[in-house]
Length: 592
Image (cartoon, rainbow, N blue to C red; front, side):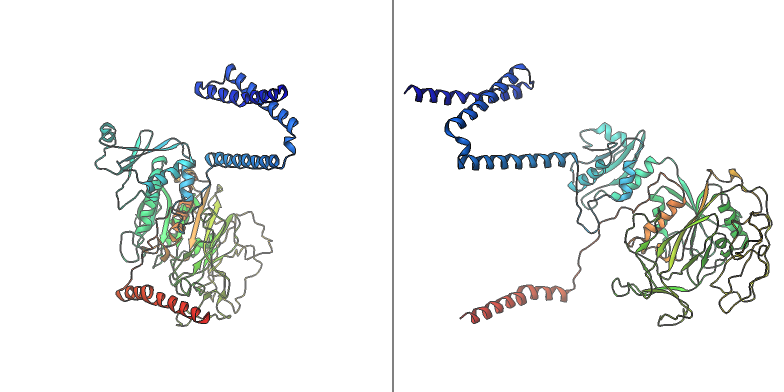
């Protein structure tokens, strides 16, 4: 009896271990101080519980029982699951992993927005003066806040804090303001029908944090695209430049005779008539002093820019770019090439395999020129999907191996040229052109190093305009006569004060189409991104992000006619149930 009583005493004594552990945890959690007393209780409880488990297993052979092993396995599995869930919860709190499955990535910030917020020079705060907190707006602001600790937002009730509302000049509920330092700017006014827009927020954020504004001039006077709203105008493109903190102004070189000194970029958008020689020279001088030029030249036009383009190794092909790949899938005609292949360049770095299209475009031919770095931006699909059509009058577009050029075709190119100081001016010599000039083939030759002139062959002659350059260091015995000179000598050395900022290089973007930037087409696919990113890169504002612009939600509502609606009702309420009933009857009949 004494042995049995002693065993029961030890059994009850070991229950003291869990009790002491509970006391220690309670004391520590309530006092929020894990001092000596809670630790003593915890250590004593753990020791007693451990001794109790060891003694119990020794007395009853407890560890060898099947029930003990099963219970231990269940306990270990439960603890492992709890540990894994705890680790997942910890990682989910520390790191945010989100997957946006919508087609237009509606719940993901565009690369431009992310890059802009990550490099914020100073703290920025968004003030939303509204009583109601829309979940969609909060989600958008949370996405911004995740990119940088310098971005904050707060909802304010104008009635509860009238002083703050008066400070911002709030006039109505739903006004959203940006504040950075002593700068404040209205973003937009939100309501039930218009939610907070990423496009406007990113645009205003860029304007607020960027202290400089670049001046963009658009050449006029030769049938270029109209800047104000109208048929075939580029007003949406001009508005897009304004949203990116560019200042735009028209430019008529026939009146000013030279490009203004504050011009960051000059755009020539679809001229229908040729430029005067003095205007071309003004553009050349602008590039020679570190300027930046965007040329969008349509087919069947001759802007008289051949001499300028030859200096950069670019030739305009008068043939028409034809692409039959998107005719059946996208609904575009063969004269609107669909581009999904882009060059490795800051302008197109985030385009991936996105779509852009260029109705009535002309190919470009790129030749290597010393000192000029060229990067093709837009390339069509390989033959037989695309080719350059020479017969523009034919109603049926077919490839002709004798006249047409197989794809892929280059529709756009970005070029850079380092600026080197010129020691003296060099006169230009314009010799007599070749007796068989071709409108589709133009290049430069250097008559000085050539031992003998080139005889025109059956193919179009590449010699329509030549420039002699007696001062370049090129050896006269060079065995490559057609190689163009390193750079043409301007009439006078460029002055460092000719531009508002010292430029180390001049940049040129040539596109064989201007229709893609017109109103209506500008907002389609990546068309607007090609234009805006080209201007941004040309402006040489390295702090300004270059990425795809934020996208607005796509309208996916279906508009049905009365006949279509009635057909849908009959098919869903009558036809489909009858089909199901007929199948059931057939199955029942076969199983009789």
